[in-house]
Length: 242
Image 1 (cartoon, helix red, strand yellow):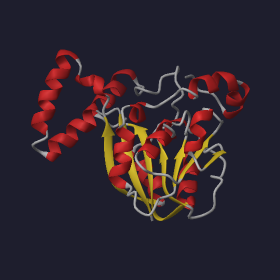
Image 2 (cartoon, helix red, strand yellow; image 1 turned 180 degrees about the vertical axis):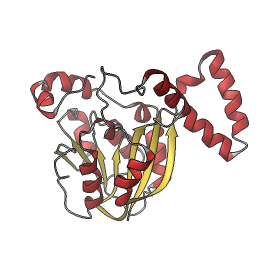
Image 3 (cartoon, one colour; image 1 turned 135 degrees about the vertical axis):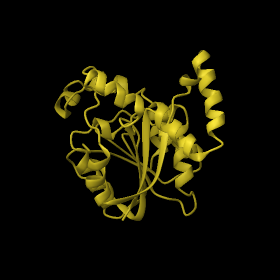
C-alpha cells in the first residue's frame, strides 16, 4: 500500500479499510509471531497484552487460541471485522506517532507491534509511550526490516536504497544499530533477537540447497544465527522495560 499521512488515511478511509480489514502480516500469517510471543511471555497470571496495529485482528486471534485472554487492541483506524471484536477486552484509536497510548501508566504486561514501527513518522513517541504504559519489567516485542543483513547491505551499495523502502510502499522509518541504542534502549533492555524468514526461500532447487545448509548450520548456534540474519527480511526485538 502507498504511503499516506494521517489526514490522507482519514480521507481515504474506505480504501484503507478495504486493505487493512483483510491484512495479516507475514510473520503473523505464518504463525511465527505467536511462536516468538509464547517463547518470551508466560501465560501464567493472565498477562495484559496490547497489540498495536491490530488491523484485521490476525494476531489477536492467535493470542486467544494460544490461551491469552486479557487482550487489548490499538490502531490508527477501526479496521477490525465485527466477528473478531469479541477477541479484545478493549479496542481504542490513536496515532502512535504523536498521540498518547490511551491507557494508564504501568498497565500492560506485554505490548506487540508487528509490521508497525517502519510505518511511523515518529517512532520515538511510540517507544516512550510503550515504556510508560508497560509495567516494570514488561515486554515490548516489535518487528523491523532487517536492513543490516548482508544481502540488504549489498543492495544498498548497488542501488543507494534499501529493499522494502521503495517509493511505492509505506515504509518510511528504519533504525541503524546506533540509533536504536540511543533511542529505544533508553527505556528498554534488549533481551532477545529473532529473525523471521519467509518459507518461500526454501522452495525450488535453491531452496533445497538452503535447507541442506540450514541443517548443517543447526549443529553450531553461531552458524545458525548467521544464516537467520542473512535470510531473514524481518528482525524481531524483544525489549524489557527498565
